[in-house]
Image (cartoon, rainbow, N blue to C red):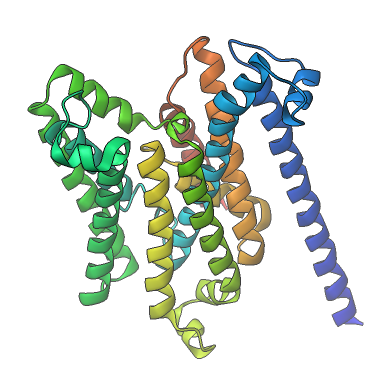
Length: 351
């Protein structure tokens, strides 16, 4: 009888989580329609539906499919990527402050972009040999190399020196300071135009991604989500402690190494394509955890969905606030993230 009651309670909780997921999915769909309709060139709901159905031609089609849809899809995919990356890093390091931003991955990407813009002249009309070879992807490639370099350093320290999760966070803070200092040093020797390019890149802007970049990031994000969903039971076992996880047969060292590599890879791609978007990888998992708890079978999809909602809402708000222009989404996520994270931290300490 008691087991039956517990099973009914569990089923009711799962049903509530499913309904909550559907509500968030509906909010995301409504936000997509709203983001398509608003802007300097406003569209009615009928024009939006006709454009999405392929019935509209001319200006409406160009506005929807060539201007607004790429950045909307970029916000959704990038939000999912940073959400799943932050969730995985927090679990694998067992530290609620862990994220791509606090581990120095984002700062490594910023240093790579600054190096490309100033030293390799990819931010000016002057073409260097490397810029000719890489074309329009020179800055993105350099940013990706910088992010991956930070990741490799963290993984090597963790693997060779047997660092604890707390020590890995401290190493990430040191790397963040090192890459930030390097970026400032490069800016010191840059021209005014190059400094403007570096600063604009570090703001973060989902409008930079085209369909080709979105395809690459989408494939990587889906693969990472599938990997962590397959290992969701192992992640749940890790929350009970490393000793408990090992006693249950979980290969913690391998899981941590592969999981950290995959989480860092997808966050490096997101940062390289869109610039530095701070706090999102830190906030989305915390908000999702407040909604559904620490069961990673639920936390994985909710972290992705919350990340997509936050980034798309911030990007849409940035377009509405500036009017004919656009406010970089990285600025808004920073303003939104700091007080919201402090609120979550205070509520958590209160409990």
